[in-house]
Image (spheres, helix red, strand yellow):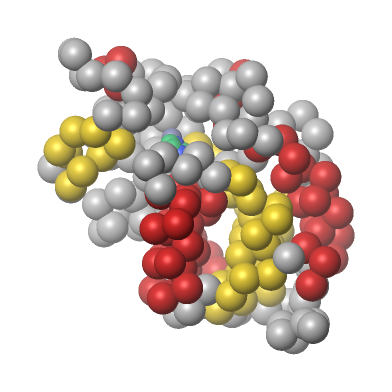
Length: 212
Ligand code: VGL
Ligand code: ZN
């Protein structure tokens, strides 16, 4: 049963999050089965009038990298000025092969690529706000100016960049539908269950690729 009104009108936008080599098998921060989302996303794109992509895009030596903090290992955390920050392996360094979109992803119809995480001292999971939850990426203004009201989201990783984008999308007043089978998670110490509960609480809708 489809609970969503027909997709692909002018008020809908498909937001594809961080489908980059470093989040796919063989990458620096590989998400299990991450590349499995590529054919699903490619098949969905033609059904939308509007698609945008995000790209995690860090300078070398970024503050979210464990290698930038003496004695710290990936997946440990630090207290940053803006709160607790998980530390990651070096990944998605600007201009590197790991930061490139997965080769199989069909980029042709994408109308916007929003890069994030490019400030040295602050990480950015969400497509809308950096991890201080205050510094905007500009996406809200872009979407509002174009009359977009509903966002369908897919990509990597469900419990970090996709999840925070979905929460912020709701907080910014958009209807948000997560296409769950076109996402994969990192699942760090139960982070997927925590994020899913937060999304439910925030009123994010959940769809399977086949429901749309
Ligand atoms: C992401 C951790 C660090 C993501 C990006 O795309 O979910 N996760 N940078
Ligand atoms: Zn990152």
